[in-house]
Image 1 (cartoon, each protein chain N blue to C red):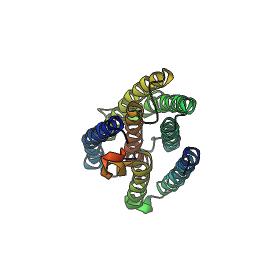
Image 2 (cartoon, rainbow over the protein chains, first blue to last red; image 1 turned 180 degrees about the vertical axis):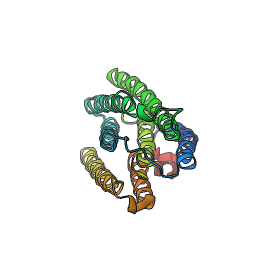
Image 3 (tube, each protein chain N blue to C red; image 1 turned 90 degrees about the vertical axis):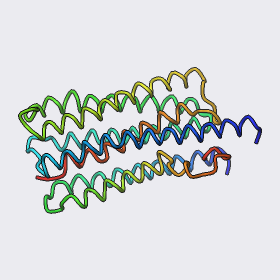
Image 4 (spheres, helix red, strand yellow; image 1 turned 120 degrees about the vertical axis):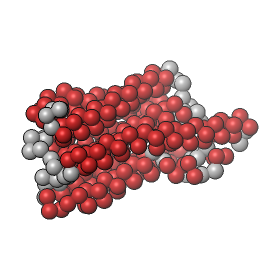
Length: 187
Length: 72
């Protein structure tokens, strides 16, 4: 291994560590919101909550994570076309998730909008904070898509793409906990 | 392992993980419709799903590998 490649890998290792520190600190925000749900409302869940829509947006986000992973595999093997195609699909699915939550679910959930309902307060705060993270994730994915189109990445050096994709998976992991906490727990 | 077969193996693993996540989501959805199931099963499923994503998609184990191989 040449000194340059060894140096690059050392820097990527450090950046990866920094990214995980960021992810752990971000997790605390969502952990607080999820604990607040149980502290304020116990296991109460309004009948009006649309569980089917919750399932649909969950599947969309899971599938977007799959596509993001395929994009990472592609760029790590020098397949720029596969990277661009899969990142583009990930972005479209991310936007579909945002539409599902903000444009479809939120108007339905106005029946228990804050401040009239404690559950509504937690629901809008948690899904709103998560939607904001999805929105920023989409922006970051668009940036790495443009970088990929310009040929910025190589199999040895594609840290920006890897970091953006790990962040996207983090957004998915957060929803893995938000979905049952808001849509499934209780009666 | 050649680069092509390596990519093919990683793609297959990605498909398997996604299928696992889909299966767990289906179980979770139906468990949520039975109030008697309680939150424990939902919590176990959520932790299982998160573990799959964190290990296979976010590659958390790369953090614990020697930096000289770039964590790959």
